[in-house]
Image 1 (cartoon, rainbow, N blue to C red):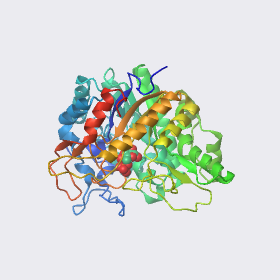
Image 2: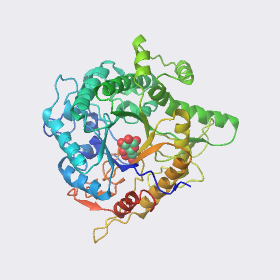
Image 3: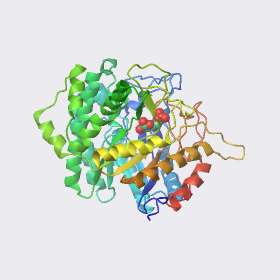
Image 4: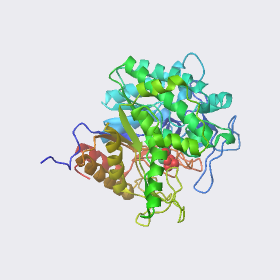
Amino acid sequence: MKNYNRMPENFLWGGATAANQYEGGWDEDGRGPSIADVLTGGSVDKERRLTPPAPLPEEFYPNHQATDFYHHWKEDIALFAEMGFKVYRFSISWSRVFPNGDEETPNEEGLKFYDNVIDELRKYNIEPLITISHYENPLHLSLEYGGWKSRKMIDFYLRFAKVLFERYKGKVKYWLTFNEINMLTQDFGAVFCAGMLDPKDVCEQSRYQAMHHQLVASALAVSMAHEIDPEFMLGCMLAYHNGYPYTCHPDDILYAQQFGQIHNSIAGDVHVRGYYSGFAARYFEEHGIQLEVLQEDKEILKKGTVDFFTISYYSSSCVSVTKDGEKTAGNGSDNLKNPYLKASDWGWQIDATGLRYVLNQIYDRYQIPIMIVENGLGAVDQLTEDGKIHDDYRIEYMRRHIEQMKEAIHDGVDLIGYTCWGCTDLVSASTGEFKKRYGLIYVNKNDDGTGDFSRIRKDSFYWYKKVIESCGEEL
Ligand code: BG6
């Protein structure tokens, strides 16, 4: 009998980051500002604030320096290699390559940074997995064109993507077109996913129009990429929402199904099947959403379907038609608490079994390879006097999720990789804190501005190294 305790030998183990949360160097070597550069710091109780058109001198902007990968890339990649990473997922800062976003030619200095990163990864045989757009629209495109509700964004995005595909052909195989495109079903997505800074655009009409433009841009990018290099593998990326029915009342069961259809499958179906499903049309109709869809869009969507499906998965929640019950925090959703689950320091409910459930659900629906490109525990870490971080809580979280990945593979799911989120500590997207740490590598940088960016291997670093070495057998 096959040994399901061991993951496939070619399984892509690794870690993931995003440029705006990790790189820093926000105004170096010709980089232009992105929307993340006008987002102030925040905390669990204090929302991050936008200050366009520019940063204010009296405010703190954590993404400006982030955890300074821009000056630590060699050191960090060496640490990834030491852990045995097979893959590293990162995003390219659009405004480092096109400072305003609408120029004709790219910023060579910005591209050189990524040349170095990619060459360094290749030196260690680490496969780069590039997210083309991860929560950082160039600020100019937001101010001048209103972000993704404008169809013009499609051309700017394609120009950017083309530069990357042509330059990194032969060096990069795996690409993701947009990070968590389905966050556009929620208010949070208006700014983060679509760079729409006008508060009037925090509405379904603008959000779904922006999503449509991104889906078209994604499909065009997929077709273009396959023409440039048929070896390229293009994926979509969804924040996978796992909302269980709060009760077994049929109304709650139906509501949970509809919740999944709206928050996961509208975008997922277009990415994989190339068309909007019937429930999407009904939802748009019943919510007064009038999408502007050009005749040619249908053909574009049909042609540009993705090769693999990726998700972020951190937690689950419950949903109910009555909405009665205690609320829980989570990745972008404010649903109901599940009495059977414990939660993280930030109130995100921990549900490893839910990962198996979700992987089966996706595979049953689409039958294409799946990668988990974000998973992990945002927690407060204590640096001990002798310079160590004993993060057994993080190890426990990851261990339980990896166990469920094995179960899913045994169930027949074609799971090809796992990149834990924020493998090196970085700025939290939702709260703007440094204190919410996900890393296996600690970065000495704090919310009060102190810290010298030095790196320390946490206990989880040594643990993950063994996991990779043993192909998941030693958990
Ligand atoms: C995902 C994003 O939604 O969740 C990441 O793709 C983000 O950018 C991650 O950092 C974790 O969320 P947070 O708010 O804890 O940083």
